[in-house]
Every structure is written in C-alpha cells, then in structure tokens.
View 1 (cartoon, rainbow, N blue to C red):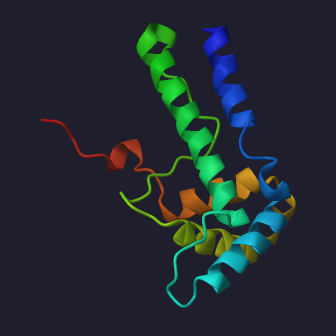
View 2 (view 1 turned 90 degrees about the vertical axis):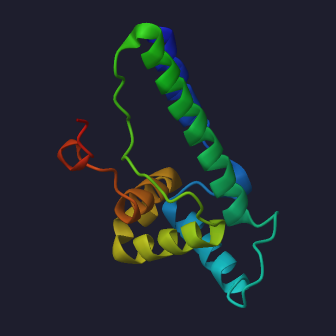
Length: 141
C-alpha cells in the first residue's frame, strides 16, 4: 500500500513543472492570457502554445494519479483520499476555456499567482466545476 501511495504522490509531483518554464500561478496566468488573446477571434489554440502545452501535461498527470488512486482502492488499499481539490468538468472543455478560468481565478485570488501553477489550476477547476457533496448525490433506491 505504501508503494501505491508513493506512486500517486510521484505522479502528482511530475506534473508539468518544466513545461515552457511555467512554475507558478503568475507565469501560467500570463501564458493563458496570451492564449486567450490569440484565440479571441475564434481560432484554435496552437498545439505549441505554452499554456495549452502546460495544461495538457498537467491534466495528463492528474488523470494518471487519479487512475492510480482508483487502482489502489480496487486492489484493497481502501478509499484513498485525494490530496487535491475535487472537480468534475463537463464532458468537453477546451484549453481556451480552462485558460479563461485560470486567468479569472488569478485575478480573483492574487495569492494563487505566487503559489505553484498546479494549485491555481486546481482551485480554478474546483470553483467552476465543484464535486457533488455526498448529501447532494443522487440517492440509490
């Protein structure tokens, strides 16, 4: 079980810290503002855009950590708590949409601009797409 917990922690730790030199909320927010401006006319986000690349790497690592947590739970490790805020996005959300959330949260919570970039994204997503509380979940008959 300790191995699985270490694996989950390692996957979160390898989030895209090095992607395009983005390490804190401010550098991510600035990169995402550039992306929003570049796509304001409705054009697609360029594949090599620093904000898009960072977000892609972040969500890939987040999904791997989530999958590892589920696998550990199914393997008998119990219900492992998430170490991050919970969010449930819609079936489709674009990188430009997430960039907008990041920029808005940075303006709303300037303290997150000096925090790790991962924290800014997690706070942005959990505010926009919060998980249902257990009491709000649909009841099984």
